[in-house]
Image 1 (spheres, helix red, strand yellow):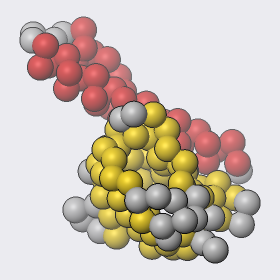
Image 2 (tube, rainbow, N blue to C red):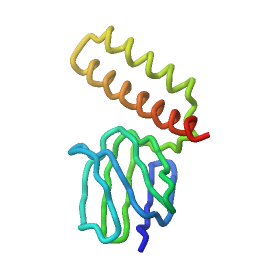
Image 3 (cartoon, helix red, strand yellow):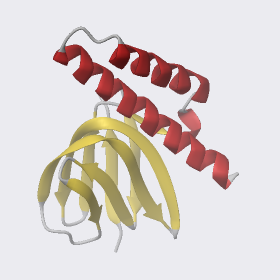
Image 4 (cartoon, rainbow, N blue to C red):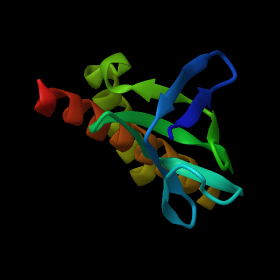
Amino acid sequence: MPIQLEIVTAERVVLSEEVDMVSAPSVEGRVGILPRHEPLLTVLQPGELHYVKNGVSMPYAISGGFMEVLPNRVTILADTAERADEIDETRAEQARLQAEQAMRDRQSTEDLARAEIALRRATVRLQVAKLRRNRQ
């Protein structure tokens, strides 16, 4: 019995597909969801979201959001979500370097927090893109 997975951002429906399993980066740790999971609502942090279909794991880079789990449906409301093949590695690397520089140049704790979030997003995007390269 599969799970209906929906990944949605403000701009688009990124994915709507039946899958076997979902693994997401919750603020409380990585959460794995199988069919007939108990209802759950959790906050997502920037990280790698994976779903498995027919034994193949598909990675996405998300930058945070919310996940609602019902027994046979998972809805991800993400700030941003990108498939590995959508990630421009050059831009992600530039964003990583800019975030590292912003951390060094910080003027306040707010600047540091923003830079840390930007660094995490860029790092996740690079990790997901690397997964794609390793599979080719």
